[in-house]
Image (cartoon, rainbow, N blue to C red; front, side):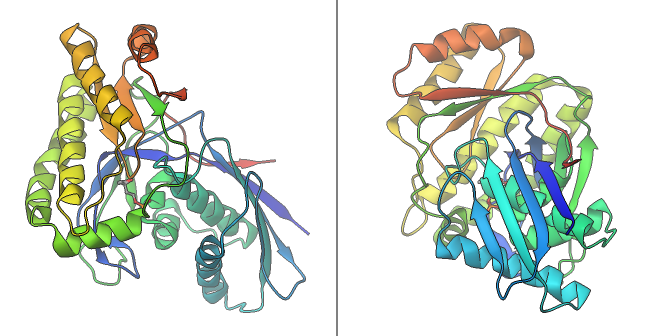
Length: 326
Ligand code: PMV
């Protein structure tokens, strides 16, 4: 039996997606822009098996029933479009980074699986179509179909047919780096799906968040194209703080941050006062990601090494599109 193995990279949002207009179809309320990361990745192998059920294995850890169901629901989409309801799959997947701690493991995971199924089932779907299917597995995963800088268009149609990702610039366009500080590698306190849902329903700031998104997207998109590091950096920090403010003010509130998160935020600001070029962003977790320039990484690490509580720093260049491994 043929086996397909795909290597896909996570992406980190510079302008965040936060909130779904349609929960089932994973249609977001706003566009988002991300950076695909090299160095960290998911490897997923898929083959068709003669079995009564799918076999799903996470190499580094046990899989929960909830995670299993989520993968099976995603496989059902492919069974449906191929009209082969009895098809069963064996899936082995591993990440070379901590999962579910705000490091976008679901993004690289669902992206790798979607692309593997496209290859295995010989669907010949182009990036736009595969991005739409991957979106149904995990929203932010649809951005990982490209390397470089990527924008996920929210679209206007209620069926989600125009909600997919496009590439703004590839991985060779601009050499910026991202440092991922790991302060917490445990499972996050709440899923982003639940935190988002509560925010949309209860935060008095949610509409204000949406009102400012268009401006942030324009700044970051044009900042990337102009290679204006300060323009991109200032906007991504503000965007991140606005997103977290909607969570702080939801009911019940969601505070993913740890004391170390604040220490790093303050250190980033201090480093800027000292003339370094660096800006932070934080996703649904406590870990802080720092956007910086290649020639300043060593100096930035000297500052970070003085802080307690950082377990690891992962250094990433801009990553490329998913690859089929032979
Ligand atoms: O697609 P999800 O459910 O992993 O949510 C992603 C949410 C953020 O990482 C906080 C923002 C984003 O755009 O990736």
